[in-house]
Image 1 (tube, rainbow, N blue to C red):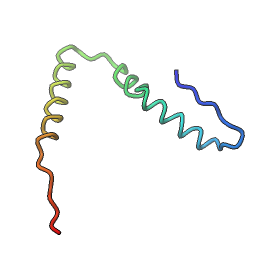
Image 2 (image 1 turned 90 degrees about the vertical axis):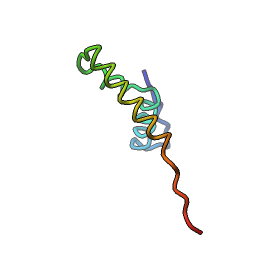
Image 3 (image 1 turned 90 degrees about the horizontal axis):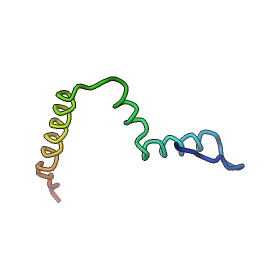
Length: 68
């Protein structure tokens, strides 16, 4: 469970931003989305395979060289 202590001189918006960042680092929202509905084992395998393909395609791209 993420927790943020609001300091006396801190605005609510700033504390909310820190809380959101803490939740993002902890992976709470992604975990919540993942458990929103049941995913069949075949769908899970397909999703992971597609993610691996995307990851390998990103790594194989040739970086662009800018002319000077």
